[in-house]
Length: 362
Figure (cartoon, helix red, strand yellow):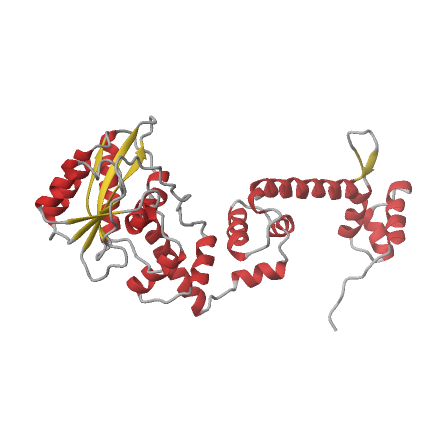
């Protein structure tokens, strides 16, 4: 049988210490008489030595060392709690807690104190460090960088539906919208689409003119409209665009400091230079579009002019929708420092909209 160390009662230890202190017996004589090692007797004697503390009350060395250890443990635990303030009170998760634990271990904190401070069971910690991700998890880790990059390089406007299309198109991976939404939440990204744009009223000088494209199909139709953009200094500028119903693209755009008939006419002329003329052009009844200059351009190219009903801007729905998207994806989250800045940034956005932005049919 294996030898086991003998356990002594507290009373026995106290009596041997008394023999040393009161009767002035040597430790070697006590050891021989009672069969206890000298080292054990020495330890018991030291544990019973009195130590003075700040309040003047003496305590045993053993109790002093115990209090000292408790103080050091509390001090270390407090340091950990301060550094981990951002996750305190949150659900214990491998993704958030394990990196912190590893950091504290690298700083030479004790594992026992770390786990106690973070309220992580020891068994949970060892399950974490021995964790092997399954195929599903490995695939998600592969996809995360792509989702972040796709979101970032597309004006931070993509939500889960467009990221789903991008993921399938680029990597051939089919994730559900719900799964992509969860992954986006995990690394803290979301579509930065802002509030809906409310179109200002339009000044009309003429009687109502006909809407020639209502319920019309199979014809080539362009649409024209103006929207407002604000510079950092509070000054407003005006964006004129021409939109193609068939391709859903902006054919031309111009930014001006003034909302004039020349602005909309030059925008239309620019579109006609680069594209085959349409059969119809649709606009609202604003004074810029009913001006003789604009009508002259249309007549010169034999394009029929169709008009929205007064007070019904959504008769020109597709281009109104584009301007709403432009405001929410781009303008409301962009600082325009100067007129030149707004021209360049708007041109870049429209190029991205025409060539890269994923369009989801409703």
